[in-house]
Image 1 (cartoon, rainbow, N blue to C red):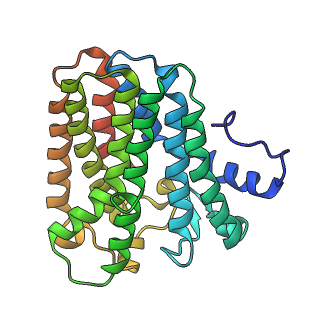
Image 2: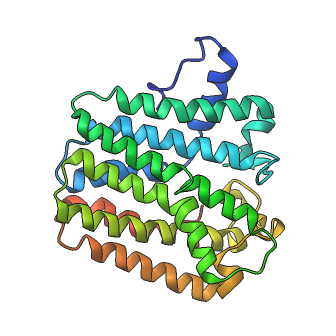
Length: 276
């Protein structure tokens, strides 16, 4: 990421500083790690997946920058330090997010050693996971349903789109670049869907009972904004049970993979065991 992001010595300096401020912070890098791990799991060359993995992290970072803006979730802190619009200003934060989104597709297009047909599929998968049929659509539903009485089905749809779509895409992209067979791709799809579900439920629970210092942001944000979450509909215990079932389903989906898929198995467990 440090190598692929624009240098702060390049003009306009301030936007490049802002991009790096958010993209090189202390995040988990879960999505790019999933991309690299999925590529490895199907026997692909991990190095070939690095640009796409970094592209996905750029898109995730752009989404966090925009989510924190006053017009969205209005959060002042992200990963233990001021959100980008607090460290700079709202206009720079908005533009830094836009620039990271554009950079993502540039990185994919400039990938060496991967066929153009595969890169085209990667662009399609990521763009679908990002747009109105994915992350953006989920964010819209999330805002529209703030403070409303919601059903479990509505919560599932919000999280499937807002968080799950890009997590699943991260896994699928690794499979595409790694040359996964049709059966392997079906397994990765199943794994990715279940990991996305488990991750978001764990996030919902951590927002209620997590350690603020470890999370790097105030807890209770979902309650403050009257968000539609799993715990708000079915409680913490039932939410945790569903998350554990999703992890088991994810691991089961890749049961026919050999030891090269062990990182994916470890990540599945980490998703619900993490504290931040």
